[in-house]
Length: 65
Image (cartoon, rainbow, N blue to C red; front, side):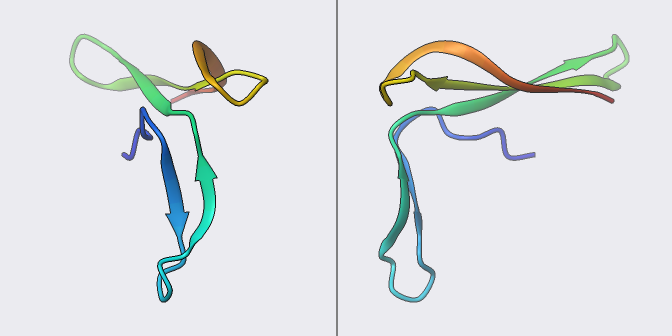
């Protein structure tokens, strides 16, 4: 699973390596598991503030597994 990136990053065009989209904030995923290691919930978070700066952790979406 790719949990995201806790920093600035960009999506690049594969042939030209030109920046297609830049992000000035990070994302990450938290996975809650049972005692035996079975995943039970996935929660995606963002560090983006409304003004585009890096700020407090905000829950983006959650999935029960």
